[in-house]
Image (cartoon, rainbow, N blue to C red; front, side, top):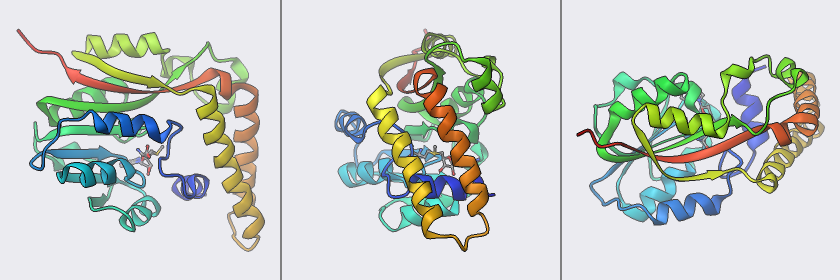
Length: 243
Ligand SMILES: C[S@@+](CC[C@H](N)C(=O)[O-])C[C@H]1O[C@@H](n2cnc3c(N)ncnc32)[C@H](O)[C@@H]1O
């Protein structure tokens, strides 16, 4: 079953396809100093809610890239934004062009953390800002959780490890927010509910059995381990000045 389909059903009508509360992004947008001649890019933009708010507030050029047709179709219903439904390719964009780059829950579209910082850093204007949303371990993951995720603990760091990576790659953290327990619950409970509602309403869908198997497993793992083990942080980053 197509992951993009599963994700689009799970996220349903959620404005953001990540667990961070909308108020956090609104506050961050309110603090931006963009103008009508600024440019913003969102890599893996989902429904492009962030860009919609930025475009409406500042009237600047906003470009969203997402490989999921389901996401960009939902986005195009609502946003005054240039949307591209395609896998992200850094070479499609001019170096140093963007005053704001967002990549929230989408770094896999670019590469690992180090690559993402380097590649997106090249597209950012010298005094621009990057908003990066990435996972971290809230506590060392249990073997059963790693088995479920089919990943190695070294594939993700804790929050302190993320901060160290930013620093070593030449970035300053100018703001951040770590998902709260309440945000996780609201997001994951809503995500599962959307999928279970879909399953009940669409018995004719050939993917229904696969969708059920997948959300059953995800839900069990989230409740047993994920809620207190998986973290998600959004970081506002600026490149350090070179002297
Ligand atoms: C977890 S969602 C986050 C969406 C959005 N940033 C948000 O926070 O609302 C990850 C998004 O990345 C997109 N994506 C995954 N691989 C991609 C790629 N190679 N190029 C562009 N988008 C990609 C997915 O389609 C999905 O919409």
